[in-house]
Amino acid sequence: MAEADPARNLTAQNLAAQKTTPVVAPGKWRRTAALIAVPLIIAAIAGYLWLTSGQFVSTDNAYVQQDKVAVSADVAGRIVDVAVKENQRVKAGDLLFRIDPAPYRIAVEQANAAIAAAQVNVATLQSSYRGTSADITAAQDRIAAAQQDFDRQTALMKQGFTTRARLEQAEHGLEQARAALANASASADEARAKLATGAAVPGQSPAIAAAQVQREKAQLDLTRTAVFAPTSGTISQADRLQIGQMMISGLPAVSIVASQRTWIEANFKETDLDKMRVGQPATVSFDAYGNLTLKGHVQSIGAGTGSEFSVLPAQNATGNWVKVTQRVPVRIAIDEASPRQLIAGLSAKVTVDVRNHGKR
Image 1: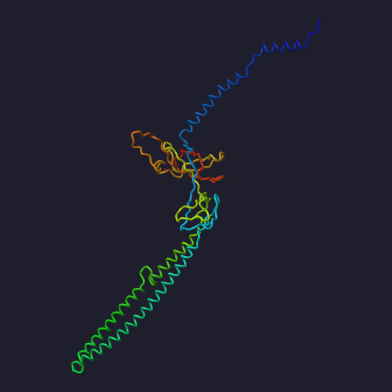
Image 2 (image 1 turned 180 degrees about the vertical axis):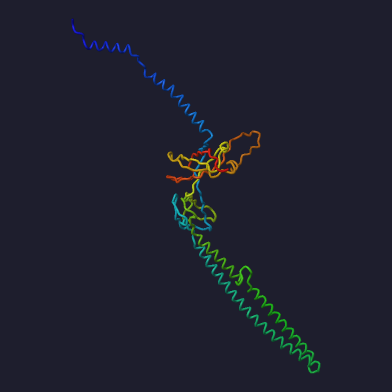
């Protein structure tokens, strides 16, 4: 009997095993897993939303805010020096620009000349007052002499040893001496009045005081020709600073963004304010920095909606009025230092945890 072929026997065994073992398609397992996993995922998401519902309010209508100081010149003039450029960091007290000081130096010299003139005038009045004192003494002496002459002529007239013309001449001389004394007294009063000092500046001539005030103003204007940074920050809008340009007093010339104090102004819907309180924790993320999230808290809630402070407030007393959900500005204070530079005006997203009622 011939021996059986081993390869043929192995093939027969494999066919028998395939007939006895059921074959499960791989796609069926994936469909089964999906049918089970999808409801579980939906249930988990729904449960999370239900558990966290009403515990957080958020808005992406939020922006980085920083103090912005508009710097202007206190005096007018032509710019002769510019010490800063756009986006430059400056410290408080740094020179920003300088206005031509020549006209203001001249004003100081004019004020000094006015003081000197007032001093000379006072010295002249003092000399005049001393002269009127001498005039009064001389007038009094003339009155005494004229009185003696009139008395003598009167006595001689009674005795018949003089004429009436001589008596009348003596009387006229006495009247002239008295008039001279009155004039000298009036001149003395006038000189004394010109030398008098008022209650506002006791002991000093008003003319000298006025000239000194004028000099102080001229010196102050001279010092204001150099404009310094009132605060530390970053220079912005420096394109208006050009050498040779005329600067008008009070007109903003350059801005400084004071980045040392930063906050977020988040405009929440009025429907989100029911549970919001001052002091509640918040998180802030930024469109510019995708991986940056900072901690903060509600610092204050605005006293009016944005539309109330707009240039043209909405007028709702019309027949076609449509209700629009208003937004209220909420200031969010940042509680930690940012590793990235926070630029004024950056868009942000704010989420407030309203589970803690905070302060009312």
